[in-house]
Image (cartoon, rainbow, N blue to C red; front, top):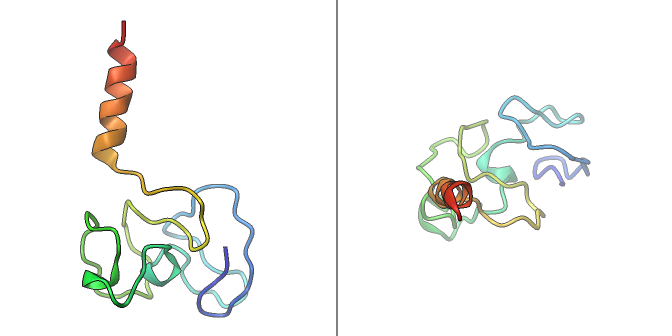
Length: 92
């Protein structure tokens, strides 16, 4: 991923936690401005319609839909994932 504040390239292998910060500028990594869904032209500045509103886009938050900018992984819907897990568990 690339820090949207200082433009430093950051190698990430695991999920980015709320407490993670950029090693160069020290800004929060798990914030709206670092997310692939951040869009100033979208409602609440977010293209993920199920996400809750976050007021401060530059500070760490608890958004479940956060994906680092440049990520190839698709959005994960917790309800859909839970349903899939249950279906797999009880599949005959």
